[in-house]
Length: 332
Image (cartoon, rainbow, N blue to C red; front, side, top):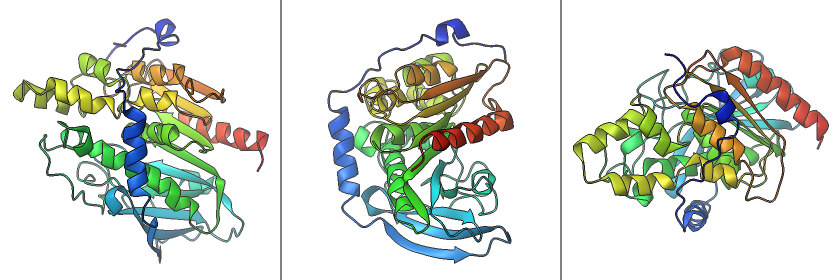
């Protein structure tokens, strides 16, 4: 697929204002306040992963509506001091998988929380362990359209709340330097990391790659690739639901979260990405922190000949170097 979005010279200055509902901040403040009424940790159990250099725990924490959400928490074995924490969010249709799957960040010396995706995990990878007990509202069968007709019912209201609560949970675990907590994700995970950056003001950094839920209206005009294509398919049947759907989506728009971010940010994007068009990532990057009264460090890396895979392992190395330099410049 050749490049299909704006040219890079235009992306560098692409900063549309989202169609933001007047009660956006009130909506999320109320949602998170309700979720915070209960203690976050439910259980923390050590697991045998077969890895000698990594220790792992099976963590259950309370997410949206107090629902139990599963996660893997891993640390380098034999390292007693508190470590910076990476909270990693998985892609669309994935669950947390198996505890030995994702080792890059723990091998780099971080404590890592990998959050399960509620009601997902059946499309890719090695599954998940967190149901979504609130998935009965009108909408389509896939996560992208569950509860699409009202923002309070929408799947991503629940999943974003879980993502924020995962930060609270990892900060409550022993061996974590809570002041250096980082949100990391690719695709749907990138969208969740972006939302967390807009909702957690003391986040230390956000590393966001090919974010879903970013520039949503433009993405729906550009691509029928799933998961955006699930919305198009739903609206092709429910022809009178467009206004309600776009209203709901305005409450999870990544550009709105980006405007409220405080943390330093590192972005990556493939310019031939037809799954999450690059204009969404650039819009979020270009409006980063504009409402927060801060001017944090930020950078974006574009890969002109890559699609949704972006820079892949090359980009991960850039993330590792950037985060190390960030913490070296700002020791705690």
